[in-house]
Length: 255
Image (cartoon, rainbow, N blue to C red):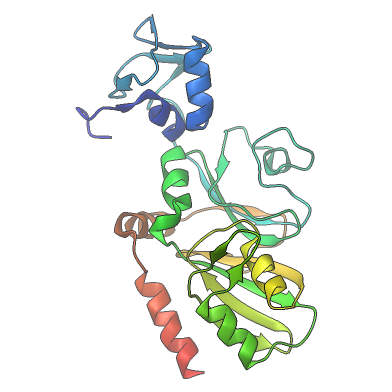
C-alpha cells in the first residue's frame, strides 16, 4: 500500500488475512474493531499506519507476512473456511489464516491456491478478469469431435439460464479431455458435460494462470516461488489473456 493511500477498513483487514470483507463488516458493526483507540465506524478508511486492533489483537504490517501456497486437494475435502466437516482449513492445520482463491467442489481434486492475502483472493475470483484455469476430465463414455466442438463453443446451462464462454478443449484420451476455462460458474464442467449427455467420473485442476500442479502428491502442499508470485501478480494486473496460454493454444493447434 502506498503510504498516503487510504482504503476501506474492511478491505484492509481482508488484505491482511484477518477475515473476509463481510466478516470484517460484522466485526465493525459489533464494535470489535478499534482504530487509534476509537471504535471503528462502518466504511471508515485507513492508511495502514494506524494502530488497528481486532478483538484486542493488533493488526498491521509488522505482523507475519502473507503466505501463498498450492495444495493438491484430495477428493472429499470441502473448500470452505467455515467449520464444516472435512473443510480445507482443518485439513491444512496451518498456524496462519488462509483463504482459497477459487474453489473445487468436494468430488474434484487438484490445484487449490490458498493465501492470507485477501486482496489477491478477491482479484483472482473476480469473474470478469478472465483468469485461466485448466482441468483434466474423465467422463463415463468416449468423447468425439462433436462433443469437443460443442464444449469449445459454449454450452447452454438451463438450470443457470446461461451459456458458458467459449473455451479451449482438446481430447487427450478415449474418454479424457483437457479444458481451459476463463469463468467459474458453480460446478461448471460437470454441468456442461451433463447438458451434452455425459457424466464426469474424475475432475482434476492442474493449473491456475501460471501456477501449475506439476508432480505435487495428492494431499501435499508447497509455497509459491518468488518467480511464480511475481508472474501471477503481473497477470492479475493485466487482467487479460496470458501469453502463456496463447503459446499453449498454438501447441494445441499443431497437434
